Image (cartoon, rainbow over all chains, first blue to last red; front, side, top):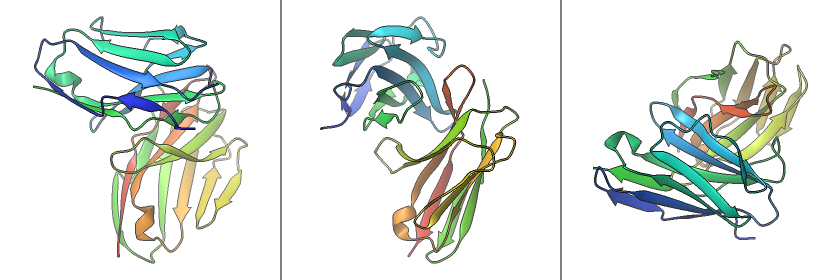
Length: 113
Length: 110
Protein backbone atom coordinates (compact mmCIF):
# COMPACT_ATOMS: atom_id res chain seq x y z
CA UNK A 1 0.00 0.00 0.00
CA UNK A 2 1.22 3.51 -0.78
CA UNK A 3 0.26 4.86 2.61
CA UNK A 4 -1.57 8.10 3.23
CA UNK A 5 -0.99 10.53 0.38
CA UNK A 6 -1.12 14.28 0.83
CA UNK A 7 -0.81 17.07 -1.69
CA UNK A 8 0.69 19.48 -2.13
CA UNK A 9 3.77 18.82 0.02
CA UNK A 10 4.54 22.53 0.20
CA UNK A 11 2.30 25.53 -0.33
CA UNK A 12 3.24 29.20 -0.23
CA UNK A 13 0.44 31.69 -0.60
CA UNK A 14 -0.45 35.24 0.23
CA UNK A 15 -2.78 36.34 2.95
CA UNK A 16 -6.38 36.33 1.82
CA UNK A 17 -5.98 33.56 -0.71
CA UNK A 18 -7.87 30.27 -0.61
CA UNK A 19 -5.85 27.19 0.21
CA UNK A 20 -6.96 23.61 -0.42
CA UNK A 21 -5.10 20.66 1.05
CA UNK A 22 -5.79 17.16 -0.17
CA UNK A 23 -5.58 13.71 1.36
CA UNK A 24 -6.00 10.16 0.15
CA UNK A 25 -6.30 7.75 3.07
CA UNK A 26 -5.18 4.14 3.13
CA UNK A 27 -7.74 1.98 1.37
CA UNK A 28 -10.09 0.25 3.80
CA UNK A 29 -9.54 2.68 6.66
CA UNK A 30 -12.82 3.99 8.05
CA UNK A 31 -11.40 6.94 9.97
CA UNK A 32 -9.67 10.02 8.64
CA UNK A 33 -8.10 12.73 10.80
CA UNK A 34 -6.79 16.19 10.01
CA UNK A 35 -4.10 17.65 12.29
CA UNK A 36 -2.15 20.88 12.43
CA UNK A 37 1.38 21.03 13.86
CA UNK A 38 3.20 24.15 14.99
CA UNK A 39 6.11 24.76 17.31
CA UNK A 40 3.93 26.73 19.69
CA UNK A 41 0.91 24.43 19.92
CA UNK A 42 2.28 21.05 18.90
CA UNK A 43 0.04 18.56 17.11
CA UNK A 44 -3.63 19.51 17.25
CA UNK A 45 -6.61 17.51 16.01
CA UNK A 46 -8.76 19.68 13.76
CA UNK A 47 -11.49 17.28 12.62
CA UNK A 48 -12.09 13.61 12.03
CA UNK A 49 -14.40 11.58 9.83
CA UNK A 50 -15.91 8.13 10.15
CA UNK A 51 -17.11 6.54 6.94
CA UNK A 52 -16.93 9.94 5.21
CA UNK A 53 -19.09 11.64 7.87
CA UNK A 54 -17.61 14.41 10.03
CA UNK A 55 -17.80 13.29 13.65
CA UNK A 56 -16.01 15.99 15.61
CA UNK A 57 -14.93 19.35 14.24
CA UNK A 58 -14.44 21.04 17.58
CA UNK A 59 -10.76 21.50 16.81
CA UNK A 60 -11.38 23.58 13.72
CA UNK A 61 -10.07 27.00 14.74
CA UNK A 62 -12.45 29.26 12.85
CA UNK A 63 -15.13 29.38 10.21
CA UNK A 64 -12.38 30.06 7.72
CA UNK A 65 -11.54 26.37 7.97
CA UNK A 66 -13.70 23.70 6.36
CA UNK A 67 -13.20 20.02 5.59
CA UNK A 68 -15.00 17.59 3.36
CA UNK A 69 -14.81 13.93 2.56
CA UNK A 70 -16.90 13.29 -0.57
CA UNK A 71 -15.88 9.63 -0.76
CA UNK A 72 -13.82 7.03 1.07
CA UNK A 73 -10.66 7.80 -0.85
CA UNK A 74 -10.49 11.58 -0.75
CA UNK A 75 -10.68 14.45 1.71
CA UNK A 76 -9.95 18.15 1.54
CA UNK A 77 -9.15 20.81 4.11
CA UNK A 78 -9.84 24.31 2.90
CA UNK A 79 -8.81 27.64 4.40
CA UNK A 80 -10.56 30.72 3.05
CA UNK A 81 -9.31 33.36 3.48
CA UNK A 82 -5.87 32.32 4.68
CA UNK A 83 -3.94 34.29 7.28
CA UNK A 84 -0.24 34.26 8.28
CA UNK A 85 -1.11 32.56 11.59
CA UNK A 86 -2.39 29.58 9.61
CA UNK A 87 1.21 28.78 8.65
CA UNK A 88 1.90 25.27 9.90
CA UNK A 89 2.33 21.68 8.81
CA UNK A 90 -1.01 20.01 8.18
CA UNK A 91 -1.20 16.24 8.53
CA UNK A 92 -3.80 13.79 7.42
CA UNK A 93 -4.00 10.40 9.12
CA UNK A 94 -6.22 7.35 8.71
CA UNK A 95 -7.03 4.28 10.74
CA UNK A 96 -9.22 1.17 10.69
CA UNK A 97 -10.96 2.12 13.91
CA UNK A 98 -11.10 5.20 16.09
CA UNK A 99 -8.70 4.08 18.76
CA UNK A 100 -6.39 2.14 16.53
CA UNK A 101 -3.05 2.95 15.03
CA UNK A 102 -3.15 6.14 13.03
CA UNK A 103 -1.09 6.19 9.86
CA UNK A 104 0.07 9.68 9.04
CA UNK A 105 0.77 11.19 5.67
CA UNK A 106 3.95 13.19 5.02
CA UNK A 107 2.17 16.48 5.69
CA UNK A 108 1.65 19.72 3.80
CA UNK A 109 3.89 22.56 4.87
CA UNK A 110 1.85 25.76 4.49
CA UNK A 111 3.33 29.23 4.55
CA UNK A 112 0.98 32.19 4.37
CA UNK A 113 2.78 35.46 3.66
CA UNK B 1 -8.11 20.31 26.41
CA UNK B 2 -6.45 17.47 28.27
CA UNK B 3 -2.88 18.63 28.40
CA UNK B 4 -0.06 16.16 28.08
CA UNK B 5 3.21 17.75 29.10
CA UNK B 6 6.42 16.16 27.89
CA UNK B 7 9.83 16.72 29.33
CA UNK B 8 12.41 17.59 28.46
CA UNK B 9 11.34 19.64 25.46
CA UNK B 10 14.77 19.32 23.86
CA UNK B 11 17.49 16.77 24.48
CA UNK B 12 20.91 16.46 22.88
CA UNK B 13 23.10 13.53 23.87
CA UNK B 14 26.11 11.59 22.70
CA UNK B 15 25.79 8.24 21.00
CA UNK B 16 25.80 5.43 23.55
CA UNK B 17 24.20 7.40 26.36
CA UNK B 18 20.91 6.51 28.01
CA UNK B 19 17.93 8.84 28.28
CA UNK B 20 14.41 9.04 29.60
CA UNK B 21 11.53 11.10 28.25
CA UNK B 22 8.47 11.81 30.37
CA UNK B 23 4.82 12.37 29.50
CA UNK B 24 2.64 13.73 32.31
CA UNK B 25 -0.98 14.75 32.73
CA UNK B 26 -3.52 15.42 35.43
CA UNK B 27 -6.06 13.39 33.45
CA UNK B 28 -6.56 9.64 33.35
CA UNK B 29 -6.24 7.98 29.97
CA UNK B 30 -7.60 4.67 28.75
CA UNK B 31 -4.39 4.05 26.86
CA UNK B 32 -1.33 5.89 25.75
CA UNK B 33 0.68 5.77 22.57
CA UNK B 34 4.21 6.84 21.72
CA UNK B 35 5.10 8.09 18.25
CA UNK B 36 8.38 9.10 16.64
CA UNK B 37 8.45 11.77 13.97
CA UNK B 38 11.44 12.33 11.70
CA UNK B 39 12.03 15.65 9.94
CA UNK B 40 9.72 16.15 6.98
CA UNK B 41 7.59 13.15 7.79
CA UNK B 42 4.49 12.29 9.78
CA UNK B 43 4.55 10.60 13.18
CA UNK B 44 4.93 6.81 13.24
CA UNK B 45 3.49 4.71 16.05
CA UNK B 46 6.04 2.97 18.26
CA UNK B 47 3.88 1.39 20.94
CA UNK B 48 0.53 1.42 22.73
CA UNK B 49 0.26 0.81 26.48
CA UNK B 50 -3.11 0.05 28.01
CA UNK B 51 -2.79 -1.25 31.57
CA UNK B 52 -1.63 0.84 34.52
CA UNK B 53 1.93 -0.16 35.38
CA UNK B 54 2.44 -1.85 32.03
CA UNK B 55 5.97 -2.04 30.69
CA UNK B 56 6.73 -2.74 27.04
CA UNK B 57 10.09 -3.16 25.41
CA UNK B 58 10.95 -2.52 21.79
CA UNK B 59 14.63 -3.40 21.32
CA UNK B 60 16.50 -0.59 23.13
CA UNK B 61 13.30 1.32 23.94
CA UNK B 62 11.36 0.69 27.16
CA UNK B 63 7.92 2.19 27.65
CA UNK B 64 6.05 2.38 30.94
CA UNK B 65 2.49 3.43 31.72
CA UNK B 66 2.01 4.90 35.18
CA UNK B 67 -0.01 2.99 37.74
CA UNK B 68 -2.69 5.69 37.76
CA UNK B 69 -2.68 5.89 33.94
CA UNK B 70 -1.86 9.61 34.07
CA UNK B 71 1.75 9.46 32.97
CA UNK B 72 4.23 7.49 30.93
CA UNK B 73 7.93 7.30 30.27
CA UNK B 74 10.15 6.26 27.41
CA UNK B 75 13.67 5.07 28.19
CA UNK B 76 16.24 4.59 25.46
CA UNK B 77 19.37 2.57 26.19
CA UNK B 78 22.59 3.21 24.29
CA UNK B 79 21.11 5.84 22.02
CA UNK B 80 22.08 5.82 18.36
CA UNK B 81 21.95 8.59 15.73
CA UNK B 82 19.01 6.78 14.15
CA UNK B 83 17.00 7.50 17.30
CA UNK B 84 17.05 11.21 16.46
CA UNK B 85 13.58 12.65 16.04
CA UNK B 86 10.56 14.14 17.73
CA UNK B 87 8.94 11.82 20.28
CA UNK B 88 5.26 12.35 20.90
CA UNK B 89 2.98 10.75 23.44
CA UNK B 90 -0.76 10.60 22.80
CA UNK B 91 -3.39 9.78 25.40
CA UNK B 92 -6.78 8.28 24.66
CA UNK B 93 -9.51 9.86 26.77
CA UNK B 94 -12.92 8.55 27.74
CA UNK B 95 -14.36 10.15 24.61
CA UNK B 96 -12.15 7.90 22.47
CA UNK B 97 -10.08 10.80 21.25
CA UNK B 98 -6.30 11.00 21.25
CA UNK B 99 -4.60 14.10 22.61
CA UNK B 100 -0.99 14.56 21.65
CA UNK B 101 1.71 15.71 24.00
CA UNK B 102 3.94 18.72 23.54
CA UNK B 103 6.78 16.59 22.16
CA UNK B 104 10.45 15.94 22.96
CA UNK B 105 13.00 16.69 20.29
CA UNK B 106 15.92 14.27 20.59
CA UNK B 107 19.27 14.67 18.88
CA UNK B 108 21.84 11.89 19.17
CA UNK B 109 25.32 13.06 18.23
CA UNK B 110 27.62 10.45 16.65
